[in-house]
Length: 377
Image 1 (cartoon, rainbow, N blue to C red):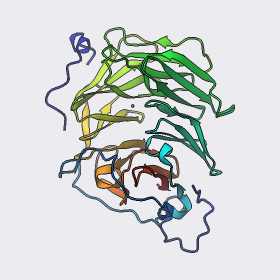
Image 2 (cartoon, one colour):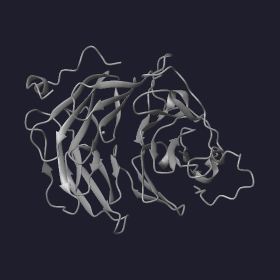
Image 3 (cartoon, rainbow, N blue to C red):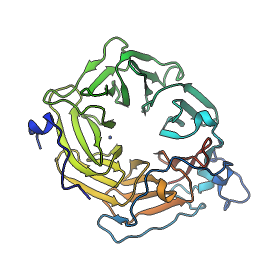
């Protein structure tokens, strides 16, 4: 549910603003009923789970309901889960826990808790693109890949053009203060700097220009200091997730600067992730998943209460999310409804991504090892 009290945004509120391995498509196993995901051989261990959620779980606009999907389910393309399966197993300690996971051009990219960026392509080639990063952000589209790095007093933004050599950054922007999450559109890379105890700033840079980073922070207010946790972009705007103790807020900012808009205040729970479709912003917090209109402020509605998603992805009218507390990969319609358990018994679930055929997710079954898997949608 929404909190009765919204976080006061200081200047934002004062200004009364107008109310984001193995590929199996050629699988010829004689036993299609076997779970291809059992190939991961990792040991159980401690660590990584979020705070436990409440005992009550409700799906908006529907009676509670949950169904498990068989490992041999056939999807609309006639493929079974064995056909769709992929495992990147036994990740070493330097690849321990996946934080951000994206898939473009038949390649998976991810960041981990140890500060590395990895790529895993359809030829089963695992490549470390960068390492020794501090809390790197990650974004990708069909044109390229971007990630951030920071230390105590300096930061970097790297952008890769996938039409050129994907392992040599086309753009490396230095001397950023403390860049965190990053987002991409066809022309620009966007990120925010979040120096401690100072207002955050929103920047963009042309993806093929390593000279100038443009400050496009809102003109009518300061962004909150050091509490911005995610951002995503569409064709017109940048959407930013801010969290403050136990409530979260969503801001909509112009891509060219100017005034900003507070879309939602006082969303229950600590903010974790944003996702978009054509009309709405979807917010994952420690208390649930919420839907907020892109154009109508204060139109925040719960989609699922009583869950603490580790990550979420939205595609084709469905929200896919990891539920670490229940060790379950799940989905729910974007409009609300019954929650479906896609797969359970997966310890320490973290990140998730989807494409036309598959759902990809990561787990960490030991303190130093983990896996990335896929299953048919």
